[in-house]
Length: 246
Image 1 (cartoon, rainbow, N blue to C red):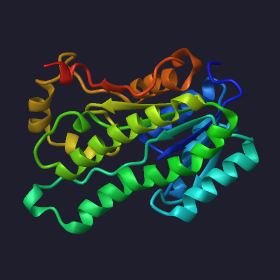
Image 2 (image 1 turned 180 degrees about the vertical axis):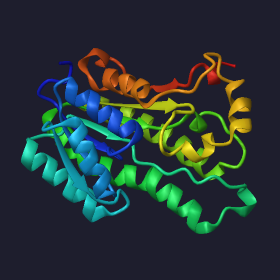
Image 3 (image 1 turned 135 degrees about the vertical axis):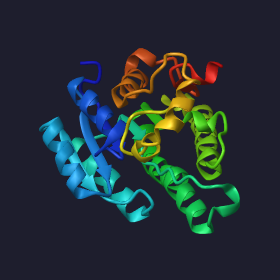
């Protein structure tokens, strides 16, 4: 019960890493709010998690939706202790073929939406003198691979955004950390992982010889959300089976 009496907002909470975090956080005693665009996925997630979860449908790029999310969470659950900025998009293409709308959408979801929601949550955390913000970034915010320039750049920006929060609000009891997963077996990566030849090549870069699971990322998020990490802020934590160690 490491999150007993704490309230957590998790964006993109209906699938993948977000869902794994929601399930684990609820198990550890948290009151969980999941947020996402697809109502059907949110309802399926509610059934998996149980009564400890509140599902709110909305778009991370909509200021009105994120404001409604924070207001509803605070009104129904009393406070916001933890924010997991997990919602994201991955749309690979060669840079010279990347359309303006793809670049803009990537940054709108991966960065602007994170900024808008975090800005709305911070006043509540400031008022209570505590809070933990966890950003689901990527190792592609630390290193670069071909044909993912928009994603690389958005996650690099997210890592710096996380550090900015840490240094600006640490004195008010608010911590901010980014976790950087490598290849994780989620719906987002399913199409990419269907290329067996490419995956065989990718695996050569993973010392553990396998890709990660959403639950393994969730365990790191639980640690950063809990009081066990009370002296940790401004970190960028790879969860990548050793990929960035090579």
